[in-house]
Amino acid sequence: MYVSLGTAAARPGLFPDLYRAVVGSLADLPVRVLLATGGGDPAALGTLPPNVHVERWCNDNEVLPLVAALVSHGGFGSTLRGLAAGVPMVLVPVVADQGYNARRVHAVGAGLALASGPRGDFHGLAVAVARVVADPSFSAAAQRVAGEVRALPDVAEAVPLIAELARSGR
Image (cartoon, rainbow, N blue to C red):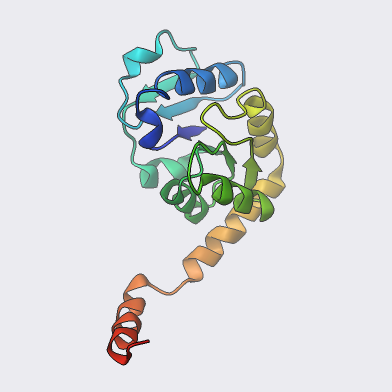
């Protein structure tokens, strides 16, 4: 299980309390948890349960292929990387577009969206994580979306199209 709440959640007012709530929710699950603090000092979290390992930063592209699920805030980058890796997700939006992203992941069956807001729905987090890990339909949907992402044209193909649009004034 990989928990990444992005860098915005590592700011004062959210860190370390938000992270402590997540750790507390996952402490009793029979899973190993890798928590990336987004730059926040891991020592600020205090004593951690034995199933939780904390790092300031992790390379999502290296970690995601190795995990059963992703717990995230639903930020655009984290969500896209999770979908591209075919990893089922539990998303707890904090701000901005994260609620929309979480609802879309939920709608396509690649994960579950919990209540939004800086305090989120951490009471339901353990139940949601257990469900996403145990129910193969979430993994299957995440893999289907990953296939769709792989089938997209390379971003380099967009450059001449954008240049042409700019030249034509459209």
